[in-house]
Length: 150
Ligand SMILES: CC(C)(COP(=O)(O)OP(=O)(O)OC[C@H]1O[C@@H](n2cnc3c(N)ncnc32)[C@H](O)[C@@H]1OP(=O)(O)O)[C@@H](O)C(=O)NCCC(=O)NCCS
Image (cartoon, rainbow, N blue to C red; front, side, top):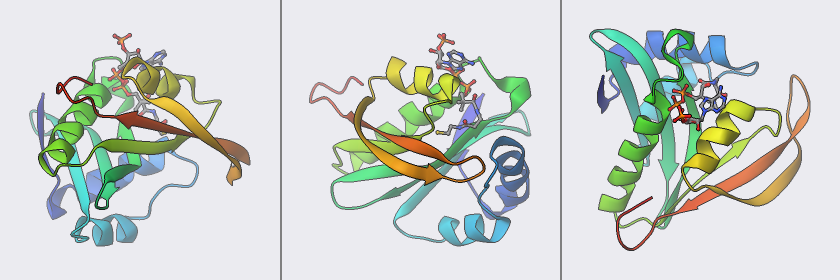
């Protein structure tokens, strides 16, 4: 598996996986415009030419926020999402940023296990944040350690 910066040629495959993974997915146009945002980083994981997963992050002067992340169902449980997050953390560290945050549904056990196993900690809860179905969001943050570990 190889992790690369996402390009315009990945947009179609990424939006298909996004639509298959979320009830309120990012549209192809929104993904295209975020890809052009200078304050965003998008990475894809590829198995040969096939898209295995992707992550999009928006960042500011101090830290980043995961916009979306998903792994193709056929590739889940093989460390794809973890590798994407670790690669992203490395890129954010190189920009002297010190944290990465995200929202997640409390019912999304796979994602919660992934984030908790990587050291993300709950820092808040947003009431009725999600639609389809309506659900709170847990706000999790990973503070990067000084010694370079996660
Ligand atoms: C959540 C998601 C991104 C995980 O992707 P993945 O590539 O399968 O995850 P990884 O293989 O990197 O998993 C790393 C760790 O996360 C945890 N984990 C991942 N999937 C899990 C599951 N189904 N059940 C329990 N733990 C899980 C485990 O701790 C795993 O480590 P291990 O394999 O050594 O036990 C994937 O299930 C997905 O795309 N879901 C739909 C989209 C989504 O919910 N995105 C997150 C929105 S907040």
